[in-house]
Length: 129
Image 1: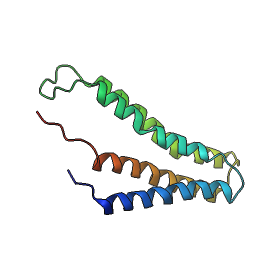
Image 2: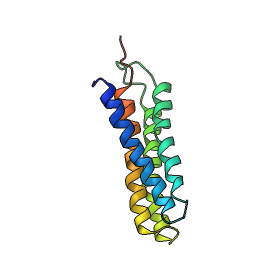
Image 3: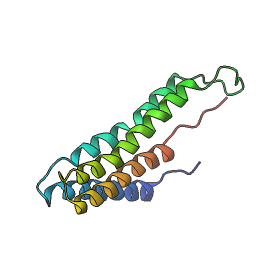
């Protein structure tokens, strides 16, 4: 696994700030604040994976137990990520937000979620047997 240094933290923080800036600008430039719902969706998206990975069977050698808990976490995370992409599209389709706000919101939301996943990848603890 890659190790996280100070440059990694600074780079990921910068990308996270750009993502939040895009979402906030998509709201402020058009004076419609519905796209802020996307931030909640992307912030909550990693939680089902984290919770379900803690509840699953830690024994990797026994495959007979099944991975239903992990699959549920992945499904819920996928639902929240797709909702974060689809919500601005639906809002733009119903003319509640402008198309430019939709594009900025989707790009900013994907940057936010990608940064959260990257932070988790760089700072996860290694398991020892």
